[in-house]
Image (tube, rainbow, N blue to C red; front, side, top):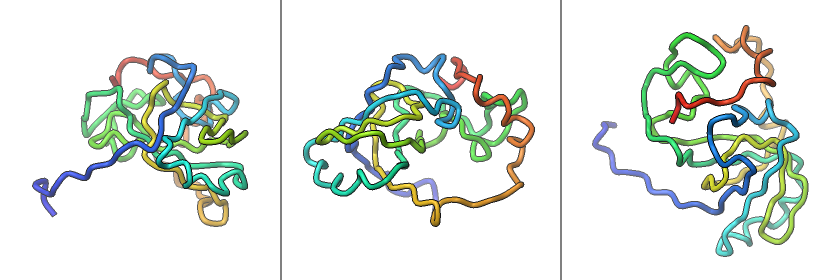
Length: 164
């Protein structure tokens, strides 16, 4: 594979409606904002795909981080003062601007999913939804790289303008 590979085209299945209208000051992970609420308005042509979703407590939302323009391969992440390779971080400044959020599904109203654990700005395009299934998704590990000594800072950490 080379960088001359054809582009991959995705389209949103819906958009997040969030009280955060600016990326500065937002929570940096859903675990740092478990009570922050938002909703996902699924586009009508994808609404049938929501059948049976109310049976899940948690969902993965795969998003396009549409507000940023930077695509560095090394970043100083929000939880550290040292530079790291972007793939060793959860930085929103990434080559393909993909986001991953685990949210707690509260209610379903037609094609609108109401959830808690919001770390997304208003209007964030959602590319896909997948159910969170602990038997598939939970891995217990003590090897969390440079994050290990920083995790206690998560609840109070908010984004700033360095990833714009």
